Image 1 (spheres, rainbow, N blue to C red):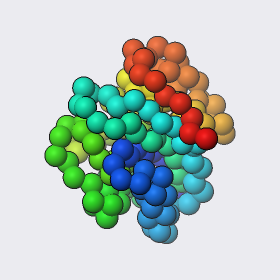
Image 2: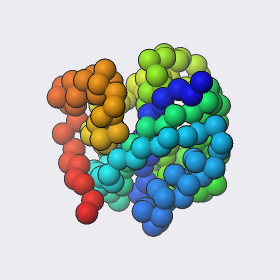
Image 3: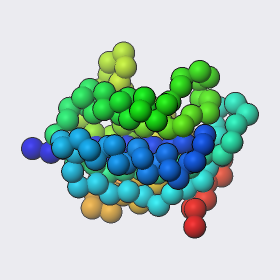
Image 4: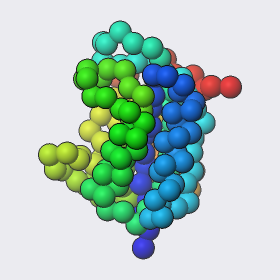
Amino acid sequence: MAKRAYLSIGTNLGDRIDNLTRALNILMRNPANQSIKVSPIYETEPVGGVKQDDFLNIAVALDTNLTPPELLHWLHVIEHSLHRKRLVHWGPRTIDLDIVLYEDEKWQTASLTIPHPEMGNRRFVLQPLLDVMDDDPVHQARIKQLLQNTTDHNWIRPVE
């Protein structure tokens, strides 16, 4: 039975709209993934103090038959295919895909932590998540609370 995962996707190098579109297309090539809901695109201020261009960010609600480690592997396949380079921590990237939530499950391994440990500190994650949670009132209430209490005051604006 499929489980609901929530993803955050961001990009600030190259053709940012094309990067998001290509990432979504590759995500859905895996037959284990269905019923996708995508937030509007938001332009966001970079976090982490590295001088870089602004990001475009979206959130995705995904029904998947992949386990969290399998889904993480698929996200890394997407990043690799879009030439993601991990050169600078919190630095520029062609694409970044993160699992933010996976049902109500908690995961803690060397390569995967769910819920994502930084989500409450990232307006660029929280705001788009609200757009894809209208059929999930429990998670939606939690994300609204995190957004109200976040210490992240970086700007975020919808892209027309």
